[in-house]
Image (tube, rainbow, N blue to C red; front, side, top):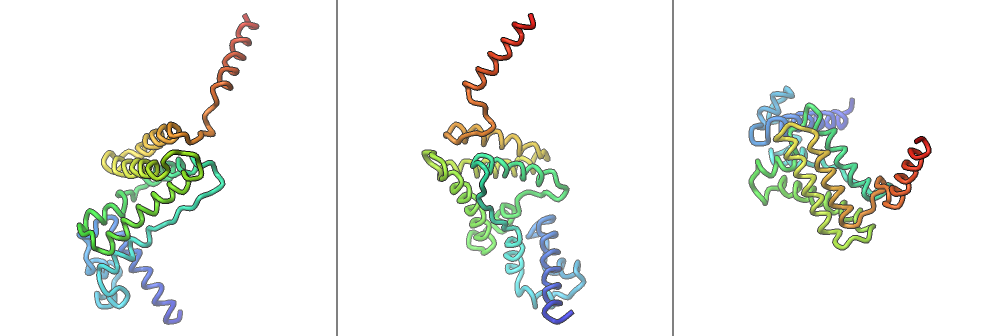
Length: 210
């Protein structure tokens, strides 16, 4: 293994260890000494890769930024699938809440680069919702995106506090009502005339059987 490859491997080991410890135990509770000891390196070696703990925090949070992209699926389905993903995440053994929210709460400093990353990430997700909703003829896609984002955040907090992955399903149901009430078409909803025809057909079958 050449020098640069070895450096990349060590950098990834440091990041993976920091990720596990920061997320599992908390940014404030975990120091650089603990991370270095966990890996089996000196603190000086760690600082060769990340000159400060703040830089390590920024790198840790940056690893969790996964951009969302619009697709060919119906807009409502694209949004509701977010809650399906949340439920799978909530059910995992490693779920400890949102790393970005946790970081903001622990850092307690609006000027900290980690806080700025967290705020930017949350706004990125809200903008994605707005872009999806802008495809539709809704009155206020920006406001509606904010409301759905609040449901997402609420689901994360409720799942953490209650230890119940089903909070994602409850938030999904609330999001469906919110969006369809605002005029977002629901492909799963059977139109009223179709429902009436189905009921009439069932009554006719029962009458013939009688």
